[in-house]
Length: 302
Image (cartoon, rainbow, N blue to C red; front, side, top):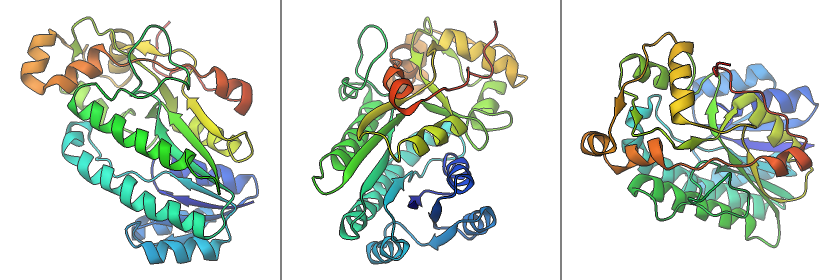
């Protein structure tokens, strides 16, 4: 199958390209950097080096690739989660405007299916794990609500076309190589510096997915029925459980505990939301239809 992947040199892009090529697909990989181009060429992909904001170039590249499927993994996130708030406007611009160019190019080129990176962790509050019928948390804290609006727009774009099959993969928090949650990476360093506390009771439930498992699910989505899928691990866990184990895993001291009021005063309402209000997601649909079998969260003890 001929496949066009945007955001190909990112954390999920690399294992995704590797798996697609291993399975014999013809892959065109889009990146904007020289380093990314060299990496992807070395993996065996045909490289389309350009900015996602150059609509004409993107359309020409998608048309030239003769792609049957386009996979949109575009992001512009910082190396350290402490810098996330400052990076969000640029990330949103890339996903909406750059991704908009990619989506229009796919439509113009007669692409059969479009697979969109979406979010499995900014889900509406409620009891239990959320399935795919649950919308995003548009009434959450400021930055979480902004991200929820962004992902709502992305899902509407990919699912709203009558000319192209749409897939929205609601990935959990990525962990593994080239992510924040890996020894020596951004979140690990924050934990070592005692800058990643447990807020309140730490009751927020986080859904995770290893980038290699996310890549496998994305490959399965090439031929599965279109729609929305939660691509998350089997056992979403609260911050009060995963964060101390993560600290031990990366060789950091136990994380401090802070009250909700102190977290709000020091870091704002979003810090409280991440620590106390996120809702986990159910992967039942992905397990049944995509054959998804994610690994257990690597650092959990017991």
